[in-house]
Length: 95
Image 1 (cartoon, rainbow, N blue to C red):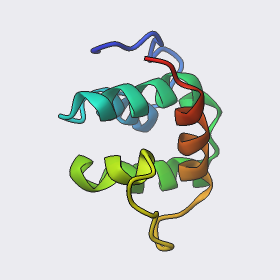
Image 2 (image 1 turned 90 degrees about the vertical axis):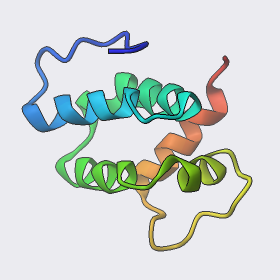
Image 3 (image 1 turned 120 degrees about the vertical axis):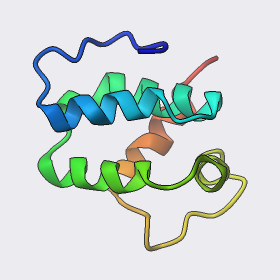
């Protein structure tokens, strides 16, 4: 996987796929943001959080990146615990 520092060993098939999708978004900025988040958090997410994360990964990068960077407000229908975790992790990232 591009950039990943986490092995998918020990993850169920669904989480393995989500880890892969996190690092293969199509937009390098989103690869770095979501891939790093997944490396750090995928093994600790609850079943409900995995559902939330999967829905977030369905959002196209061109719509999602401005929300993650704060350029566009987050619509209430996608605001969830996992998105808040992504935003918090994004604030502590250094590139």
